[in-house]
Amino acid sequence: MNRMDGKICVVTGSTQGLGAEIARQLAAAGAAGLVTLGRNAAKGQAVADKIKAQTGVPVHFVKADVADVGECRHAIAETDRIYGRVDVLVNAAACTDRGTIIDTSPELFDLIFATNVRGPYFLMQEAIKLMIRDGVAGSICNIGSISEHTGQPFINAYCASKGALATLTRNTAFSVMKNRIRVNQLNVGWMSSDHERELQAAATGDPDWEAKATAALPFGRLVDPEEAARAVNFIVSDDAGLMTGAVVNYDQTVWGGSAGPMPVPAEALALA
Image (cartoon, rainbow, N blue to C red; front, side, top):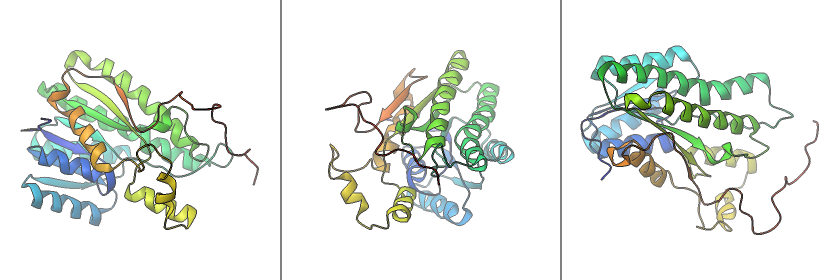
């Protein structure tokens, strides 16, 4: 099930967390080769070497910041140079920096949209060109967020970027449907990732934040990167059949449902 035999896969944001786990699972599922992307060369190469040692699958790390269109194009060109084609693209890189509607700077807004929307756009553009050139019935999965539905006030621009990504996913899926290229999105909920732990530790200063945060959740825990990666593996595999244009929520909430009054912000925004 969910086999990737013979496929060449590109995974962005794969120096840690969900992206690294997606790359590992695609390799374990039989991929013929991987290209992993990230900004941190040391961490990225270490992850690539570990996956190769565990699975025997060739893994080439390309240092790239997806906020830079030139680096996006270079990464796909490198994949073509090394392997001669692209079968699968997973856009897992993201910028989750905090900012409300009051205090988000133009620079932060541009960085978030460059990373979360423009990067995936041009990575898809280059990968789709190769898929069409080679007649590949490829598969693309964008990693979205449950926050695209409305989200939280403290990540205002991030939520907007994930809403934009969902529209981009659907539009691109429709655009390339007759080429038999599938494009889907997994909206991941609150996840216990390396980066989230760093952000929460800095924001709360509480080493027990995760235990306290998850005590009232239905499953008593946050989303595990391993289980989210399994969902991605299915989405990009042939077992997903003709599934395309789907934006799938992967979370322990049902949007629009409430056991009491509909939620409201915890407090009013204030000027600094």
